[in-house]
Image 1 (tube, rainbow, N blue to C red):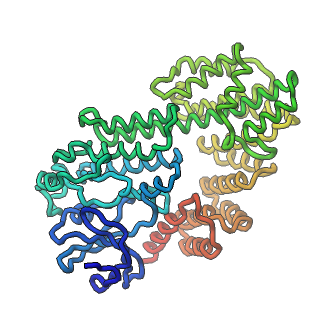
Image 2 (image 1 turned 90 degrees about the vertical axis):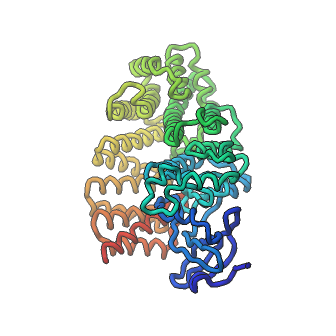
Image 3 (image 1 turned 180 degrees about the horizontal axis):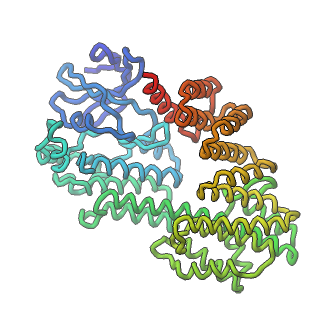
Length: 545
């Protein structure tokens, strides 16, 4: 029977088919009572497994079952309607998935599988494939369709007071033999021997799928593929022992890329500094123009995001080749390019200390101090610093760099260096729980001519520091002034509303700010304002009930 447009349970109007599979059909349904949309899955009346499993799950990456109806020999599961695009749809669009999104989504999937596999649930999902992974409009990953999931023996025991399926995990597993998607389903899945490592196999296939357009030979791409291939070993015994082990590998990979980016940023400053120093001896104007194009520098703007690090590094090391300092730089830069387990940190420690104590002009020293501050912050543990000692060392190095830059304030790129030093000092002071000093540095930056995006970030960061100091009246002034200048910035409304609701208990004002955000059509791209708005509304409701 084709049910589109019919009224289910006198309440849910089935609008259209969202998808179909071997275990059922999913409709978009409009709730006539609540005036909102749900996803409704139609399954044979005798199929209770999926409903029994899902009704005990509560995780932000999973749709909730809110109602179950039985009509005309079928069971209908009413679930959250999740807006977004499946991983399959994203890949078919031909777009490459950026690294930051890929690693974020992969870690989110791991966290979800940890929840499902955990002792409280013991659920084997079995159906990891691109069409079952949905990127929600919030930017976070969601998992769909538990049609062939089953409770392991551990899960059956944990749920024995709730689930009609308890004590029958072997039967569940046998009834699911033969299900799965070729290329994503593990070999043992077709033999009825599925367990936690079966889902790890499917996850490895997803990793390969997400990285299909990245066939480069970089260490990053190789490591990503190595993790995926270990997940997909034919023998279960050769795979990762559990999903937590996979998650740790991915988190280490994420940390490595973030730390490497930070030190690369510092080395770009070093490269520019060297080029400026060489300018007196070689074709000065051409060299400066090359540096500007190479590193994406424009007067009054920051660096780094548009910088060509690889070219800058080659430029820099070429000019330092054969010198004692050049060898120090090479050791440090080569160390951070290695994966953490392979890096020779003892050599790097010596090189960092030697470089810090080396001689040079004040301009050269400024670049070196910025570079070393980034190295020390990114790799404090590897370099032997105790908790927060690396951050304190970075602060001292940056203060020295500030002095060195001020000695050369007339040089072409000195203002760029100075603003970067102040910005890094502000962030370091935040980490050291020194909001007063952090605000002072932010104010110095705001006194300069800076790009709009940097100005916005600095003003909101300063407001956050006042919040940290519990100086809410001053934070309020900063937010109000900011919204006067940028009335369509969703991030500011949300931060301000959170302060009013959570820290001042002013729920009505928080609601007013969120309402104002909607009235003014505030931009939400890149910031999860909907999630914050929803949370504040929930808290406001709880407070007033």
